[in-house]
Structures are given as structure tokens and as C-alpha cells.
Image 1 (spheres, rainbow, N blue to C red):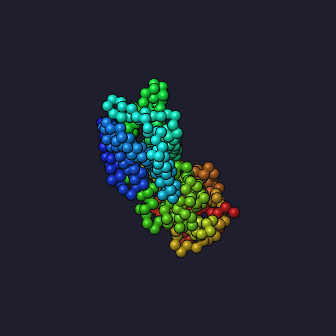
Image 2 (image 1 turned 90 degrees about the vertical axis):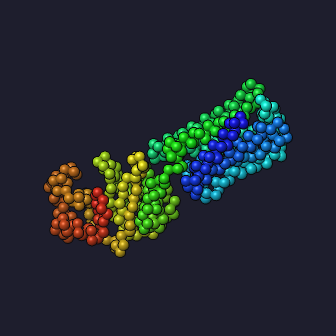
Image 3 (image 1 turned 120 degrees about the vertical axis):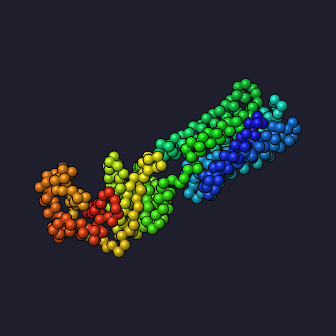
Length: 428
């Protein structure tokens, strides 16, 4: 057991260093550093405790080790909350998870019923658990109180992860904690109760196994050492632009400060809300992207009217595209745009119907009347009638004048995208 404790301490410190050195400012990496540091100190303390033959020395080292054991419990949950983005919005509140650890350690030091009975096994002192003591059940409650929530948040994050890779990572973490809890409970509680033998103290061995499992994640999936996520890059790579990222369910995932200022909301207040609640036409853009994905990369542009937002009247020239991870999996949608400077809201196309809007969109793509009729499943004569009505309403004579008029009035996106769409008229 001395060698197991020594290896656990060495690998704990080493893995903590390898993870945190890539980005010391990362909260998830800082939390894992606490996990590895507390486990490493606990393991090194165990090395000295298992090497002494003096009961008084062992007892003092055991109490010190119990302190870092409980702190390790707290750090384990702290890391789970940080890496799954489940920590409180006011992040310093997450450190309250350590409060039960400190209080419990104080009780263990004051009440000696939990650490008063030791037995000499295979040349080393070990605790002969007093299973009927309040201290033992307190330790058991703390153990479950930290590991069960950690397991839950891992599986919850796996259920909402946008990519198969991320789901796999959090499933591995969740199942590894389940296995760790099950094996430890059998070794510490079940076996001593059934066979009337003291715990053999193999907990550190199971902790070492979990660390190796985590090391596999770091090596295989570059977990915690991967470059920033695509949405994080997008939020910082376009200064002066409005950037909104949604998930595959078309709900807002992240937005930058320019978007928050434009829409008059806090940058995190719209998370989880349908994109249409943020700006009209967002859902339509997502549907168009989905329809074009099979044919290759999809990029759609549209001038959107933000008149429904009391604090954001005006137009925004927006481009939308599918958001993909480094493996090519589609993980959501990316919206990038800029407000149309100096544009005045106009009722020029207020009388244009939705069918006429669809025909204008097809005209802007260069389709002929016959192609528009075939696409919209109407007759070519009907298309000609609609075009005549459009020209009469707008006071123009041909398609060139139509494009120029719409562009001059900021109804056509200036983005060089795969498709240009007219701003959809507001419903009466």
C-alpha cells in the first residue's frame, strides 16, 4: 500500500501540473489542480502514516490525511461543476462546497470515537472502522453527498452536449465515478461488515485508477487541453460585429457584448431562449441552412428588422451559417452581422405579400419565371401576374430596378453569401 500511495501522489501532482500549465486562468483547470493537489497531499501523508510503527504518530498523520481526504471530496464536486458549466453564475459561491469538509474535519478532531480504534495489519497501522459511530455515518454521508451530485452533473451534461465527442467524454467521466463509488463502497463498507475484517485501505488505489481514466481523456480527447471552442473564438474574432451562437435546438447558447448592447439585454440572460425571441427571422435562417446543408456549405444572409425591440429600432445586415467543430460535426448555428448605419425604417414593402416576397427572393437569385413557377409549384402565368403586381406596388419596370431599389433601401444584404433574402415584412 505504501507503493500505491506513493504512485498516487506522484501521478496526482504530475497530472495536475500537465493540465493546468496550458491555461492557468481556466476555472476548470484550476478546479482539477485542487483535485490533484488534495489527493496528492493525502497520498503522501498516507505514505508516512503507513511507514510508521508508532501509533501516536500514525494517529496524527491519519487526522491530517482525513482533512485532505475531505477537501478532495469537495474539490471533486468543484471540478464537476466547473467543467460542466454548472457552477453558480457568481462563481465564488462554488467554494461553499468546501464548507462541510472543514466543519466535518473539526468534528472528527474533537470527537475521537471515529479514530480511536486501530489495528496492526501486515506491518502497518490501519483504522478499524467503528461502523456504529456517528462520525462514520457522517463521513459516509459526505462521501455520497459529493460523489453522487458529481455523477449527476456529468450525465446531465452528456445529455445536452452538442457533439458525439463531448457526449462520449462526459459519459466516460460519469461511468468512471459510478465505478469508483461502487468499488470503494464494497471495499470500505460491505466487505468489513460481511467478513468482520478491517478495511484494507485500498481507496487510494481506486483514486489512482480514476486519475488514469482522466489521463486517458486528456490524451485521447485532448480534454481540458484542447484549443478554445469554436463559439469562444467567434465571440472574440469579430470586433465591432454582432455575434450570436445557437445550439442545434435553435436556442441561444452564447452572444458577445455587441449583441447584448444591440438587443438591450444581458449577455447571459437569453441563454436557452429560442432565437426568434432575440430577433425575428432567426428560426427562418436556421431552416434555410438545414435545407441547404445536404448540398454543401450553407451560408444565408438577410436584412432583419429589429423594430420589435424597444431598445433596438433599426435594421441589421446579418449572415448565418452552420457552426461545426474540428471534426466536421454540425453543433449549432453562427450569426454575424452589423447594424445598417443611417438606415431609416421604411414602409416601402409593407404591402408586399408573403407569396410576393418568395417570388422576389427567387428573382434576386437570378431564376427565370419558368424556374420560379416550377420551384413554387404554381403556373408561369401566376408568376407573371405576381411580378406585375410587385412592379406596380414598388413603382418600377424591370428586375434591375427591383434589385437597385431594394439595395438602396437596405432590404438586401450586402454580405457576399450564398443567398440574399429580402427582409420579411412584419405580420399585420
